[in-house]
Amino acid sequence: MKDINSQSRWRLKLHEVIFEADTAAGKWFDVLLILAILMSVVLVMLDSVSTIKNSYGHILLAGEWFFTILFTIEYVLRLLSVGRPLAYATSFFGVVDLLAILPTYLSIIIPGAQYFLVIRILRVLRIFRIFKLVQYVGEARLLTQALRASRRKIIVFLFVVLTLVTIFGSLIYLIEDPKDGFTSIPKSIYWSIVTLTTVGYGDISPKTNLGQLLSALIMIVGYGFIAVPTGIITVELAQAFKRKISTQACPECSAEGHDLDAKCCKYCGSRL
Image (cartoon, rainbow, N blue to C red):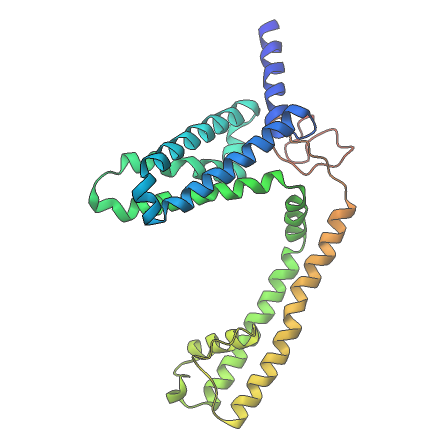
């Protein structure tokens, strides 16, 4: 019984250091890990520059393996510190942590010149380490909450936009001549999306007066549509700032975003 209690205390202490930011140890852990993430991402970028790679390839390789082993140890400690390792491993940040270390190991298993392109893709996947920074920024958590709260409104908005670009694309297909680039309705829908978003590539443009009038209408509508998702997310973001949340993570499932006075996890019900 004593061993079980001591093991439980050890796991809670480890969880406090790795997942919490309220203690001095937790803050130092986060700071050092952020620095390691940034340095590893810089190495990935430098590795893509041929002149630097040719001159300092061995140093970059040693640095890559150093950070891979470091993040592997961190990943294992995270799994050990939670009561439900599978819940964390299948969570967003758990998958990101795995993607941060997996490509380096896979590049060993897949040797040979014929797999060179595959290895390059795996090495580029190391850039996922930058996503690990999100879990250390409180404002990013609030933004995530706001996006989740507004997802239904955004989906309805996108459906309206999709309907409009389909209608506009079909109209411009009937108005304009195929020799001017409007060879099909999908091609015309592409033009209406580019025009509605005010991007304006210029690869396809209407030549008739009626088509140009429709283009002007779409551009004006586009300016109004740009403000809609911004307003939706802004309202939800303001509500998220009003709802104060703690930095405490659940010791069982590692979920975050709990209220300051929460006693139990709202996802798995475990005591905080």
